[in-house]
Length: 231
Image (cartoon, rainbow, N blue to C red; front, side, top):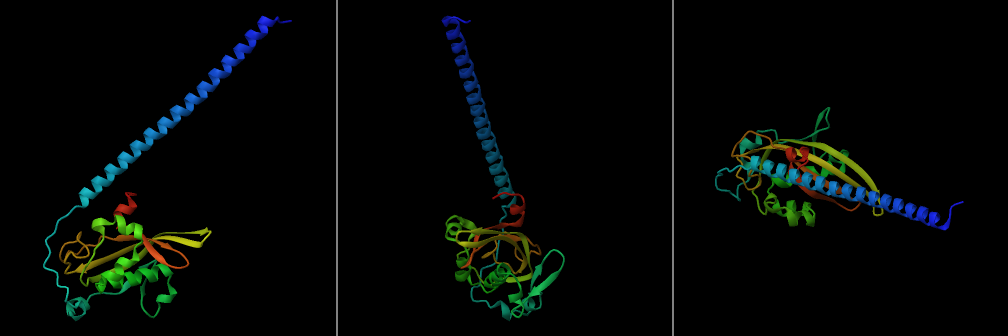
């Protein structure tokens, strides 16, 4: 049988082993935590760098003619001869959204149909109401306080993403809708990333949140920025 001294030694040995094990476990957690922090920092840095590089590549400066806020674009026969229909592309087919069939489309597409018409009619007051207060606080140069009627044509809507979640306040829908169009005689008051009469389409995505009471735009950005995850 072990004497008292041997029992004490064994007990002290077990305590040391337990202490070492605890220290090793704590060390692993500390190293893991530091690794996560470092990797997160590196990821954020790379994300910000990619965002800065993207912004730099998109930074263009154009010279526009003076804006005529009294011009009624519907009196311009050249504009009226263009395809001014608002098309919806579901990935397999294109259909035209009209006042007669608009109720057959989702609330989000109805909303964006109205948004496009606000842009065409130069209704900047109602246009600015489509955004959430949080977006308006951070929009900066992305927000146009005032713009003229816009000669949009070759207009197309496409749903990029769509999801629904049941919450305590009811069903909430998150959707991303891409809006594509050309602008005839662009004067830069609404889009300053397109040149005057530049025959180019740079789609913009609107991120929508739909609740039982309203639809609001929570963010807006070029489609290329959205697809690159730079937001």
